[in-house]
Length: 517
Ligand code: TAP
Image 1: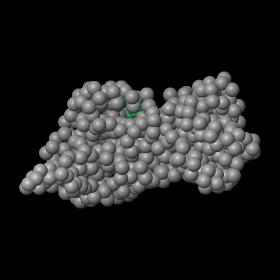
Image 2 (image 1 turned 180 degrees about the vertical axis):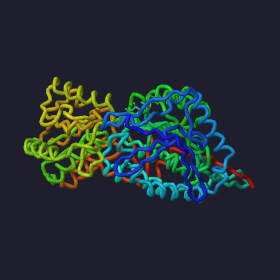
Image 3 (image 1 turned 60 degrees about the horizontal axis):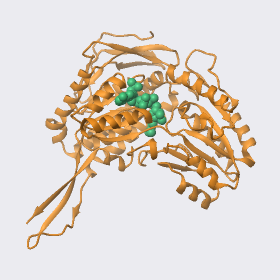
């Protein structure tokens, strides 16, 4: 283990607030990184009630960073009860919406002040390239907290002209209320960002929360918990439990006091979560699930831009990206030249230590995922794929898999249907003028998270964007998400939006109040 487990108590002040925990202290990325490694329940860092722990591993070194408590269902219960108490009786409920907004803004400022630590922690725990972690994993997280802090005092109902009970009159109004205790369950690809996309909207709406980060990447959530105390978020409003999805995730989705689950992860587990929400107490639920997003390149596209963007669409964050372009359709007349340029571009990605500022491509998140990618390429090749570049684990320490390009992916190839969630580009071609056929093929998937199209022909791209069955469509760009724009899937990529005003709906319920006078 490369950890130094300090027994020194950690005390830090911010406007008189202190946080106490047993810190892990690591010298890394030219800084002394100090962070909690315990769960966070009712404002306190604590161990599991069973005393059990598991390790979290740095994928660049394959060494353990520290141990993390393995929560039990008793711990889930404790966290839910703390969140329920904070919701029913705490300061959070009494506070004005504007003051709630100030707290969330303060939290965003603290995240900004600590962004290098957060990005370093994200890098060592998830393998994210540090420069990208700063800009995206942490940068977009800060933006989303800032964005939703501004919504707190703008959540309002309506006055509705209903038919009066003559000779009396009626006044009908709606108020938008929080749902109560919310459970949030997130995956490992953007640990802090997935937490933030959901939790910022959830807290802006006035709820309290129990969050379960992915078992393999819990560290930024725990550092975030520390900052939430410094921001003055009252005890019990945010609780973070660490452990396995099949145990504590399920205890959370089944819990009778939890009123809503916000889930991001695979379609398979999403279905389990939805069933559990239905059976336990008809919980409200939103699901951001898997994808196999098509990207169509017409011959009249700006090809230079399209090459760069296509590589970004697949290799961004080493392909561990829910909206990664899962199928690339290239017009026949440009196919061979375009593939050649894609290979040249892919080979410029510098693979290496994610903390090195010149690195563009870091290690995959964890070992089981890397093994899945190796199998994925082998199966695609058995089904007729041609390996244009990459395809094998890199010969170096760490869980590295290079940007990989597979061409000749026919519709019946396994790689035309299954999500890899890694840096594997799957290419097929289409007849230049057969827009109908490429649309049919692009839509012949049960996923519907994102899609993209490149062409300079305005009426063609409008028609294609209208027909693509996806929650997000990119035209002459890819990967361009923003905290103010709603994001979420169609079909088996789930339902319910993260980000933008629409995300608030996921964490609110409308009450109609009718007066007679
Ligand atoms: P999953 O295996 O589905 O895990 C997601 C989360 O659910 C993890 O925290 C996991 O815990 C937990 N979980 C597992 N079983 C559970 C159960 N029975 N009840 C409740 N929770 C349970 O996905 P993953 O492999 O971490 O992430 C990859 C998938 O996420 C991909 O399909 C990707 O497309 C999708 N994804 C989608 C989006 C959006 S926005 N649509 C964004 C990112 C990722 P453990 O940590 O213990 O496994």
